[in-house]
Structures are given as structure tokens and as C-alpha cells.
Length: 507
Image 1 (cartoon, helix red, strand yellow):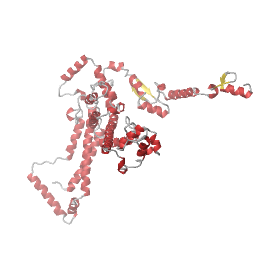
Image 2 (tube, rainbow, N blue to C red):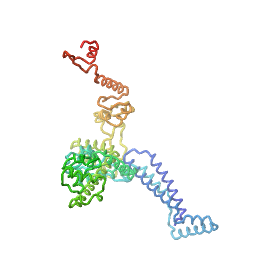
Image 3 (cartoon, one colour):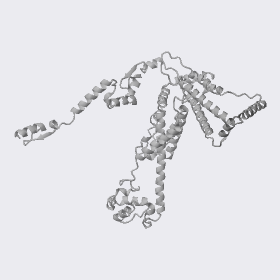
Image 4 (cartoon, rainbow, N blue to C red):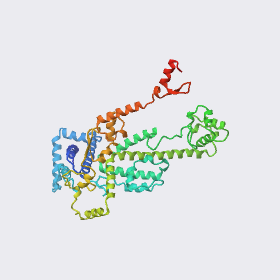
């Protein structure tokens, strides 16, 4: 049995070995997606183990039960040699009872991490499971969420590719369609994205991420700036019929009376008050509740069954709380989509490639998959790629004719983007609407409008912006030349000419 001080020493050794292993894991060169993900999972295992060792060490040093202090006193007291020989005797007796017991050094355990790292392309060392559609973290598999989306009531039916383009545009869905079924769809989408992020980026602190999401959401939702959920207007004087009315904005009952009989009636019903009488009676009755809580209002003003009306207000609160929970799920989706933006873009391209293949190509692919032996995994090997061609959906270099067909052999340099190089005309044209080019234009103080399409040099962009500004200045309205006056004879002349003639007394 280990003593407390020996446990303390072992945990310190373990922490040092963990740090050393994490450093080696970080600097090790990873060439494939599989190796990168497996490496991050090994780092996650080491990090969790480090935190657990730190927690145990903290408890030992705090010494709440006094065992450590007692053990230190035994080893440093007047009978330290007696204590030493007693412990030596216990060790000898233990090995007499267990002669075949072998103490495995801690270094052997950490050598296993090095072996896994060196054989990173071996499928047997996979630390996480992915579906075939996900391609070991390269793509998203949103088919299940797509089926749920298409089954929502009142939602336009679209194909899978269009769904990949718009599934994060939740603010375009009308609020009245965001019901319980929609909430279940959002929850399923969030669960999948969280699970995917945990598998692809295991080191990321998801708890802290969700805490930040909730803080930002509370601020935006309260201010009414959250996308798709503008601030409720039930507190204004122009609120919809049937809603409660915030009378703090009115200083007299006459102002309330200007809203009309029907609006005052709906506001009184919402509070559970009597709603009869003339316009003046209703306005005075409602204005009398200003600054009072429901309990402080005179009981004689309440209508029969007013308890039900109070319950209606509670139901409104419950409905608002449901809407807030749905909006929070949307906020989580927005943030998670930002994290998986690269796999999402790769997924769209992968699905488009698959749909563009002919039936014969699909059959050949299926035959190739069947003929591959189980003990081989060609996808994990580094493919032969002397021309440094981009990899296709199967992880192999695309054909050279396809490479030239898409113009990927042509490089485009953009000075505004910091001399960033784009491969192919498609990527070059697309980059003008992306964040890097927009940031470069913003640094130059130039708006990124259609006038500057295909402009890549800073000098050209500045000269064009100067020319556009001068054109706008020349097109502005000049009163002396464009403002017209009519003289006594009915002649229409410019303002400047009119002023000159008037000063000369010729009018």
C-alpha cells in the first residue's frame, strides 16, 4: 500500500510526464485529417488526466484530515529510523506474499502514446467514430436534421444541397411557425453539432463556449437586436389589440382616451378589470392603475372571473419563455456553425461532386470499395501526388485534366488581401465577397461595392475611389447653376443669371 507522500511524489511525476507527452504530441507533424483528430483526442485524454492529478494533489496539500502532517511528523521525528525499517519490513512482506508481482514503471504507460502517435495512420488506433458520410471529420452528416426540417409544417420543401446553404438562416423563418416541433428540430441540430465539434475539436471547452453564448444572447435578446426576434411592442401605446398596455407613457387619462374604446377594453381585459362604461370611464379606470401592482388595485374594479384573466397573463409569460428558449437554441446554432464553417463548405462541395457523377462512375466506385482488402486502408496512406494536385472527395488527387479544366493551375494574386494567392478563377471571383478582401478594403477606407469588382491592386482601388468621389461631387445639386427663376416676362433663367440682371436693374 502506498503512503501518502509516495502518492504525492507519483502524482508530481505523472504531471511532468503528461506535460512532456503533450509537448511531443503538439510538435509531431500530422499529415492527414485522421492523424490530426486522433492527436487532439490524445491531448484531451492527457489534459483530463493532468487536471485530475492536480485536483488530487491539491487535496493532499490541503490536508483536511491531517494525515499528511502526521506522516511527515513520523518521518522527521526522533524515531525516524524505526519508521523507516517498519516500512521496509512491510514492503518485504508484501513481495513474499506476492512473489510474481511486477511493478510496471510509469514510463511504459506513456510510451503507448508515442506508439499510437507513430502509427497514426493505422485505423486500429482511431479514438473516435465517424459515419461514412462524415469522412472522419471532413464533412457534416445533416441528413437526419434535413428530414426533420422537411417535415416541419409550413416550411418550403427543398433539396439537400439547398438545405446546406440555408439551414443556418433561422431568422428567415416566420415567428408564428416556430412552435414545439420547430424547437425539437433545433434541439436535434444543436445536439448533432455539439457531438460533431466534440469529436473534431475535443480540446475545445464547450462549457465555457455555451456560457459565452448565453451571456451574449441575454444581452442581444433584451435589447431586441437578436436576429429574427425583435423586441416586443406590447408595452407601446400602439400595441396590437388584445395585448396588455404600458400606461407609464401616459401622463393623463385624456391621453389614454385617445386610443379609443376597443383598445382600452382589451387593455382592461388583460388586467382582469371591468371593461364597461363610456370612453371616459374606461380611460379613468385604466389610468387609476398606473404605478400599482395587481394586489394594490381596488378589488371592486375587478370583473367576475378575474382569476382566469390573471391566468391569461401567466400563459403569456409562459409563451414568452418558450420563445426565449427557442431563440437561445438558435443562438447556439449560429455559434456552432461558425466553428464548423470549413467542414460545412467542404460538405456542400462534396455533395455537389457526388450528384454530378454518372451512374457508371457510382457503380465503379462501389466495385472499388468492395475489392479493397479489409487489412488495408488506402485512404490513410499518403497518396502519390508529384504535381501537388488538390485532393478529391475520396482523399486522392483529382485528375489532371479536371485540374486544368477548372483553371486550378492558374494563380491569382490580390494585393488588397495582403498578397494572398487564389487558385483558379472560381476561388478568385468568390473572394471579392469574402471577409479577407472586405477587411482589406475597409483598411483602405473604401466601401467594398460592385464598382471595385476584379480590382486587386491598392493603387488602382484608391484611384478608382478618388474618381468615383469626384463624379459624385460633380453630380451634386449646385444652386447657382441648377436652381431656376422666372422673370417678369415669363423667361426661365438660372439663379446666377437672374441675380446678375437684378443687380443691374434690367428686370
